[in-house]
Amino acid sequence: MYEKSLLILNGSCRKNKTSYIFAKTLKERWENTGNKAEIIHIIEYFDGTKDLDSIKDIIKRNNIICLVSPIYVDTLPYPTIWFLEKLSTEFSNLLLYKRFFAIGQCGFPDVSLCESLLGSCKCFAETVKMKWLGGLGYGGGAIIDGRSMEDLGKKGKKITHALDLALADIFKDKEISSKPQELLNIKIPKLLLYPLSFILNYRAKKTGKRYGVSDLTAKPYLK
Amino acid sequence: MKSVILDAMEIENHIEGTLKELLIKKNESFSYFKLKNMNILPCRSCASCCYKTPGKCVFQDDMPEILKAVANSDIIVLVTPIRFGGYSSQLKKAIDKLCLIGMPLYIVKNSHMLHPMRYGNKSLLGIGMADGDIHGQVENFQQLVGSNALNMQLNHKTLVFKKNDTLHKLETQLQNIYQEVFQ
Ligand SMILES: Cc1cc2nc3c(=O)[nH]c(=O)nc-3n(C[C@H](O)[C@H](O)[C@H](O)COP(=O)(O)O)c2cc1C
Image (tube, rainbow over all chains, first blue to last red; front, top):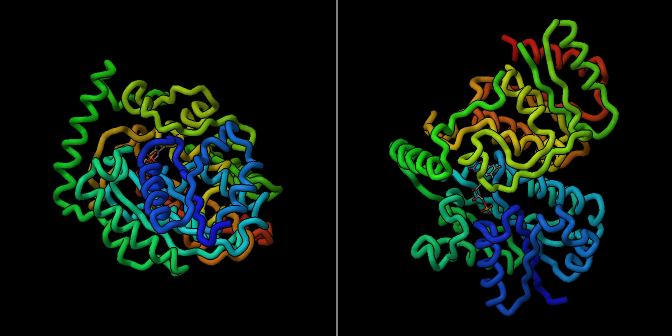
């Protein structure tokens, strides 16, 4: 085993979207330090296309684990919670004293929406007796929608810098400092939320029309 | 007042019996869903429910039963073991699909961007069963129920029990909290 090998869990059911872009960037930046990193997609274990038992060897060869996950209804998605439950009930002996950190990203710009997800990751670490090294939240993941950091220009550079700083802390076995989170925070003046909603509503209606749907407000289950 | 109860408890407990007794005594109508017996598929984030079939998932599972009840209810009650300071996967399989009650449109309320709800105002009661002494798990659970309430624009209350709480405590607290929610 390498001294500092990083396993990145993609918690999204979409294998090539925003969570993956964060995971891929983490992997590349970590490998630049001369260490190993690998990414696995939780959804493949949930769907049974990968055997859950094969996770044993993967955990054994890595000593740091990072979960990158989208927010679904304010916390981790169902398959991701299922996976953490499996880890804690079936493989917790393999996780003992390994390092754990997490990145949550959500659709809305408000980064505080990531708090419950990161709190759950911390509780998971304590449950399986891993060392919690902290978490980062990113609001606005829906706008990234799977585009690479290079394609994102200045924004991509800022995110990459934030991830570099976080990885430097992780490398030193230190809890992630406050600086990376400060870089990831998006400051949208409250008044701008109104025109932003207006534009997004316009776009949503246009998308609906493209599918021949003119009423997005349907109530199919109302008696 | 109509209640929908989404029960994700995995082990024997008194919550189901006490809740049902309470609601029958009050002559309130309710739909009780034992989630572990239900086939609910995960959300694949395909966005069909937003733009192609608004409010409906294109994958066939048992969720429409729950959605019918939720659409026509006043109170949603969640019952779950507190898992890593949040919901168990059994509860989360239904919660992820509650996205269907939101519209793919945007409003601003109290400085938060939110999706308007299809089926109007309701109340949310989150009941968690705490096991072990993981630091911060109860607070995180309470925060999660609060965030869901903000997200879905619901009034909310939370109630946390410990595994070894007495039946009497459970009955009294459930009765009190239900009283508050009904008011
Ligand atoms: C079922 C579902 C629920 C979601 N709930 C939230 C939410 O509560 N808050 C939020 O800001 N974004 C929410 N989102 C948006 C996703 O977090 C966001 O689009 C994210 O960037 C998707 O990550 P991915 O591209 O890695 O799949 C939700 C998306 C889905 C599909």
